[in-house]
Every structure is written in C-alpha cells, then in structure tokens.
Amino acid sequence: MSPDEEQLKKLLNQSAPVTDEDKALQQVLRKSTNTTAIKDVGSLFVGWFWVLLLGFGASAYSAKRRFDLRQKLKQTKNNKN
Image (tube, rainbow, N blue to C red):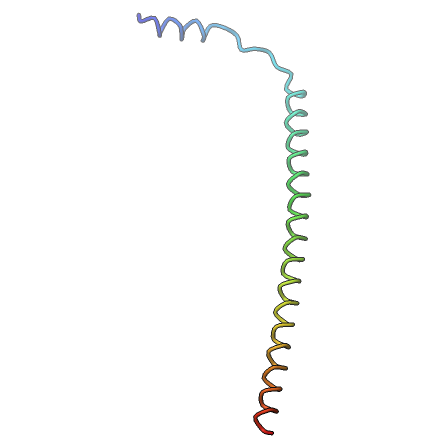
C-alpha cells in the first residue's frame, strides 16, 4: 500500500469537524443580504447617473438643433435680401 493510500484511509476514518449549521446558515444569509443591499444601492446611483447624463445630452442636442435652425433661417433671410 502506498503512503498516499494510507493517508487517505486515515482521513476517511477521522470524523468530520462539527459545525453549527444554523449559525453557518445565518452567517451566509447575512453576508448575502449585505452584498445584495450594496449592489442595489450601487445600481440605483449608477441609474441616476445615466439619467442625468442622458438628460444633459438630450438638452445639448436640442439646443444645437435650435441653434442650427436659427442659423439656417438667418442665411435664407440674408440670401433673399
């Protein structure tokens, strides 16, 4: 028998460490709740950032279009005179 097999047999015969399953479950639930809360708050801020960014972009686009239309009207008036 090889030394690896002997070590495996020793490990097999040893009992597993005793853990409190309720305590372990509560710890996992607490960590997952905190992680979920952090992700939710982060996604809320990222969402508001995009809303603001798109709002400014839409306003700038509208202002540019109005400016271009005014310039075009001025040119057509000057060409007629």
